[in-house]
Length: 488
Ligand SMILES: [Zn+2]
Image 1 (tube, rainbow, N blue to C red):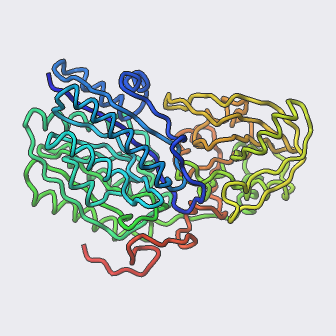
Image 2: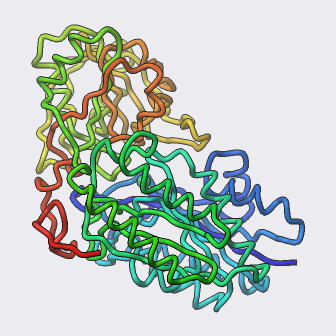
Image 3: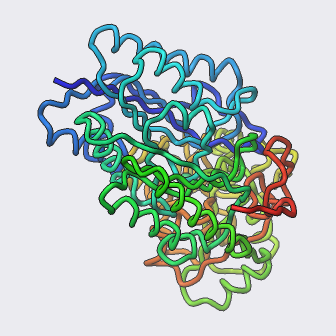
């Protein structure tokens, strides 16, 4: 038997969101629970498990998973407690069973209020327990790869799609790489080229954009005889830590020189197209005009308050503009606001109340908006996302102000797909404007029903207008914040 330990830690931090991600916001699963949670889902862990199931000699040792919706930086005590829990769980498993290999499922863009590299710290603890056994890690392509992480992982396997639709396949790729290490078929040479580049915009969409060309170079490397893993990690532009940048990763079996040459080529490609990797935003007024002249649904992407990128979700900027405009078509807008939910629940379904919406979590950016609303419906907030994983927004209410339905949740959710709305009785196809809090991840879910899409230019802690954000820690100079001379 070969015992393969695995664990998961994931959250994406937006440093400019003042609302912290605390310990309690991490959903935890332990031991067997972990297998049950992920079985049959479209996730990295299920892809990993399915490949391992084809090799009867491989025994999975599940330890612990901790996953939170994206959000502000994690307070020091909470992060210490979380990493302590994970470490204790791994220590316990390793005391009971000899561990032969490790799979770590990470997002990779976490930051603590005082720790710039939580994943590196966890990996250090894991290595201290398991020693020098084969260790692979799958990561989001928005991960921030630190030198410490690169040192501790044998092979890093990044996502290849944006919007992300290849989580399951990434888990499979991780499993195949780990099996090659276990079978002693590979001696990985992992090279990284660091590029001082932060990217945004539509050209990142891998199916249609320039970035996709770079990813296809990576896929060709993986498909070649000695190719193990390759990717372009663009980092989460809102995680303001020193090692935030774009990293090109190429891992080959032996053949370090080839890997280095290829990584440099891809770095050169990304750098030479840097001007393309900026977002083109349009004003909220112009967006409303687009909706007015569009037959059918216009999706407003509020990337500046993208909870998926780590923003607070309490922006009411677009809501305000819709209320003030004379647009009369049905609109659907999500907002995180615990007090508004409480007030609506107290009033009850069918009641008419005056509530303030938004501006409670990031009050430095947003000011509360007072509206007369009807409480249409009240929910317990439990639902299932498109990927099969559970979502929980605390209590959820649907409030109606004239032509605008507002989905108000107590706790941050991913406002990316349609399920978050349709599970609460709001079918996106029935509206003329739907606001999603997502820069691009919403596209696979809305392509079939959206007649138009507007990337709306409003303020927020995850604005695609990077120069509007108060970066303090990222190593400078970096494009597009600064003028940079860079030679690959
Ligand atoms: Zn991502």
